[in-house]
Image 1 (cartoon, helix red, strand yellow):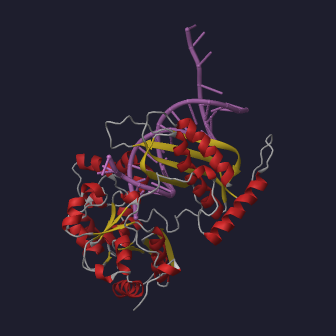
Image 2: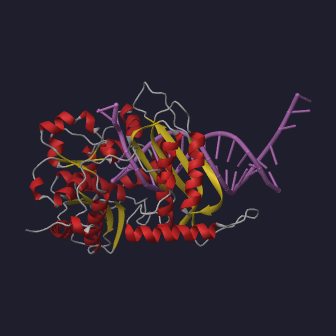
Image 3: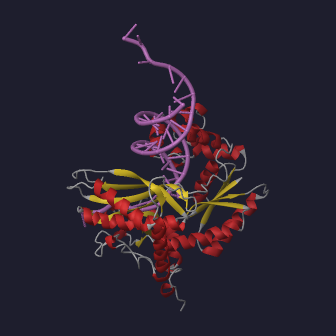
Length: 414
DNA sequence: TCTGGGGTCCTAGGACCC
DNA sequence: TCTGGGGTCCTAGGACCC
């Protein structure tokens, strides 16, 4: 049996943790750049605010209901997440952390689920202050489904018999199923399929044909046969990416390169922290797709490195060269990103037959930069091409404090 | 004026090999 | 006039997830 444990309205709950005055009041958390809503408390949902709503379109609702607004504070959420996961890990012989706010626990042959599961839930709530819901079922897909039901019915839902499963899927909307997104939903809707109960009656081959092999797995999972193994969490990272929207449009290649320099530096840092080097570096640019009156340009290019690298100098240089080549005058760029793929372990460096490798010095330089930045704060040492003005930098006007990560922002009991 | 960021997996098609 | 078969690797693009 799998237990999917998921925090309720995680970011909003985390913000509330440090300001109990917010209990019972509507709270929303905005995405980077204070762009759209990515978390809502129950009260905020009641106000009619939807996931993904752009802040500037719902400003009136936010004001009318005195909604408490926060910019996203990922350092804080990461820390709270760790606490929740540590608590969950005490209860399960194995725990797979699936995202910042949820984890699959393996239950083995536990008998008395009806007693155990509510106990786990109560303990996590007591120890961390974060409300969680737990769904239990024989497959991951059904555990996700059980969890969604749990959210609406007391916090736990156990589907441990075929009868319980049949009953649950009969009314479960197909659009809420794990693995059904917008496109598949459209397809299913046109066939008149509204519930998971109807969906799983389709023949196996239909799934394979229309939803690839992943659909076939889904079909098996819906009938209680586990097709997604417990340990399917990727052991090795496949790609590392850094991308951000700009506060304003960028129309100057030099300014664009400042942003790309910063993103590339961050990507190089991430690579080094993971002990990886990349063999490919992709750079992409976006204009604003929401503006039909603007000319659109979504160029992207993947550069192959002669020798896998993770030092800031190499990565920044390549990223800037590519970005300059992609840039087109007359376009208003809104976002850029750098993606490192073809990842190899730092130690498994494959040298190039014809190109001299002088990366050793640059690697040492990057190491030294990391040490200085660790001691004195990120960005203490950085590439000059990042620029100094940085008018494109993110907006976060409603940022809460580093309650758990900065000594001078720690909460005081008075 | 203002619409997030970071991932995974799968498939199709082209280039290349013998 | 008539031009194979079997394979790998790589990339782009599309679907999904939180």
